[in-house]
Structures are given as C-alpha cells and as structure tokens.
Length: 327
Ligand code: BTN
Image 1: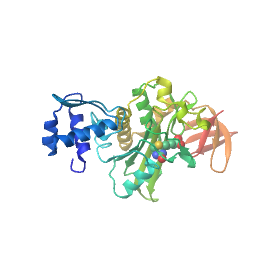
Image 2: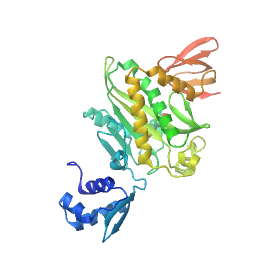
Image 3: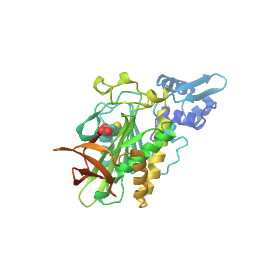
Image 4: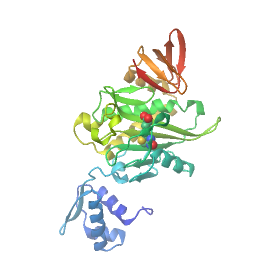
C-alpha cells in the first residue's frame, strides 16, 4: 500500500469491508491521519461518484462503486493469478490505452499489467482507424503480455483474445453474438467490440505484446458520431440496463487468463474450434479488403494459424490480414 495516497488507502479499507460499517476512528488509526482528514477524503470519494453512507455513530460504509473504474473493485473477488495482479493503471482520459501500455511495457511493465481509461482522445482501431471512445461508459483496456513464443505465432493471440471476449459476453448476458474474422464481435450486424493487437520485438523474439480491447458497454446511440450509428451496438442498447465496468473487467481478465494459459500449454486448436463455432464463417461468401487489393470468394476453412482459406474463383488464397465483409 506504500504507493497509494490516503484516499486510495481509505477506498481500499472500505472495499475490504464492502457494505459494512467501518468507524472513522479505525480508519484514522490505521492510516495515522486525523478524523477530519478521513471525512475530507470520504467526501472527495463521494464527489467522484462512490456511494458511501456515513453516520456519526457507525462510521462509513461503501455501498457501491457506482461504476467508477477502480483497482480495488476490480481486484475484489478476482480469480486470476497474473492478469490484474500487477500494475493496474487507470486514466481519467488518455490518447490511447494501447499507447500507454506500450510505454509501460517499454519501461519494463510486467506481464499481466493492465491499462484502463474512462475516455480515449484518439483510441486506435485496426488498419489506422479511430476507435470511438465516449467518456465514462465503455471499456477501453490494454493488457501487457510477454509470451515466450516465436513471433510467427503472435497472430494466434488475436483469436485467443476474441474467444476470451466472447466468453465474457456470454457470462455478462449477451450469449447471442458472432465473432467476425479476425476478432470483432457482432450482435446482428452491429459491432459491439474490437481488439487491436500490437507487438514489439524482432524477427527472432517477442519483447512484448499489447492486447487492446474496446467494448461498448453503457453507451447509447447518441454517444457515437453520426456516421457510426448504423454500425454499432452496446450492452446497454441490447440489455436496457447498466453493466458495471469493474465487474465486466474482472470477468474479462479471468476469461483472458484461462485461454491464454490454454494457448501457452499448446492447446490452440481447442481455442480455434471454439472460434469457428462462434464465427459462422465457413462456406460464407465474403469480400476481402487488403492494403492494396479487394477480392471476393467463399471461405473454405481457417488454417492452424487462424488465417482464412478462401476460394476466389478457383484460386485458393490465404488471408492473414485486412478486413472482410459478408456478401
Ligand atoms: C478495431 O478496429 O476493431 C479494434 C479496436 C480496438 C480498440 C481498443 S480500445 C482499448 C485499446 N486502446 C486503443 O487505442 N485501442 C484499443
């Protein structure tokens, strides 16, 4: 707890006794601060959105994080042993969590460290696009990975992440979704989440990998720019209720760690089979858009790396990058 300020320490104490009264005197004794300082910090926490009840007789009790992103809420009941156990950096606002995670990893940030933001000023999407990141509602998270694998296996982690995210959706009340190659998640034809995988290394070895995930949780259609409104969806639009971001992140970390460990144990084929079941892509006619060309064809299968095998007018082509659309 040495790195935390008194406000964080108070929050941590309140989380340890979630929903139960903790006396101001106990807090002030534990932290060696005055009871006035305790009150002042409790009020600041309340201003930040936390629902904290206070009484002269009983002290203080935390009733709800009220969807304010915070480390202690994520860690409460977290079942992982690596992800979310190291650094958890939370930004009120940042350019991109992937950029922040990249910086942290470059400075030595351990595998399992995560970077989260309430809002991204210029969230990065695939293929140079922007990821719309309205404030205070959705999930923008980046994970640091340091797998000891050859670089050519790194793209498989995109499939691993998509299956982990898909499991998280099932656990969070959205079982009816499809994965769109390589790693978008759609409900109907609307996009609910996207994943951006970035890597630092050379041809022989990987220094680190950043898995960035954006999930539209509590945003309404009006939170998105007009040009996206026909193509996006959110948990809120589907379930008509608010989803707690800390709970969602905890679930996501646990699903991610489960599949990442399976991948490291050499079980990628199991993960790929799950991906195929949830993607409904085999035999579909698609349009492929790559950097310098567009072509159409029928998907025959996925190879063992998760690349699409497409029959394009009799020519069999392997697709390992780019965008696809169903025809
Ligand atoms: C896509 O184009 O579908 C990928 C979107 C990935 C967005 C996430 S949000 C968290 C992380 N930080 C970023 O800047 N991008 C990813």
